[in-house]
Image (cartoon, rainbow, N blue to C red):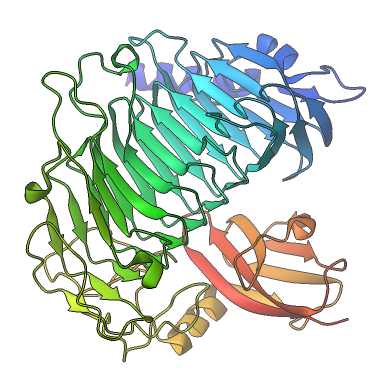
Length: 493
């Protein structure tokens, strides 16, 4: 009892000591780096709206399990880090939340977060939410978000687009136990997400990828052996889980490269320009494991004539150890297509049947789709689809489970009300519970950046839309528990 009372007093003292450190013109601190030098566990660094030059270096910024340090803009999209070789570099940090910031026009890496080269004390417990990377002013191998030696992290509700031609939107070297969820990736350079250098235990779920370069998700790659975390690991990537994502375009959405024990399940892959997936090996050092023991299951793949060589298998790999099953393959441009050249026999394949998408934005399917309830009856992962809906039993194939539209509307009305609809000046969102984020997109899934101003009072939120042209948009609402709802809204002028 005494120990519990001491812990309570410690937590209470931490709350009392927590401070708000303001950054901005006329504020206590002019730059982020200055505020972080003074920050302690439990503090919030509040960045006021404005444009900030890049170049800050942040080291040894440490919260704790009960008192995270929060770096947050006063409003989403209001604080813009523009230019510089990078917006900031953060090294050897822990228990940090970064929220609502915008990064653009950096000439090297947009944001660089690392372990300071000290593998024994990695940066850990990092959450990045509601941030936006708009564009790079770089060529070559530069990344919008570079993560080196990061453990226990979450990237959620972010937008990353227009990467450097030879780089990644997000690059991971030696990272572990991370989650990417509900993000939008568009116009990547070489990759949207790359996981290499012994990166392991990464969940990539419920994201949308649009035209993201040569390899949208590069599960593995090629890393100098001295940069592996841990040193001496014999794989580039291990236990990467790619679940319930939507892929549109790119040369190849999925590349397994020196990867082992990775799973790609219940995704929708729509019209890649060359291959649906690749099996490759780039690191061949002595004792290094060949790419193998990976799974490709319950996915919908729609290709065109430019992608009729659906699978590319390179040398020094172990394709015979892969599992392919319960995938739906469809070529709308070739009714006589004989199917993909899978390296092993694929049980329960559905070949060249139209999945009957209700649209090519959310890729919902009707109950008449051949994908409906056609997935593996023994699969238990992923638990939820692209929209956060639980998969039924047996599950459907693809990223989006069938849900009766009437039931969706009824559930939406139970928890969230939207009015007016059609709207002119603003949309009011009245929620039953706390909301994590609200986003308005076009019907193509493009975020409307000038409609992100939200005023909130309790569970009532107003999103202003008076600058938008007439048309139909999609309002996406995420509750605090991660539940996602989407509803068409109409704007009239």
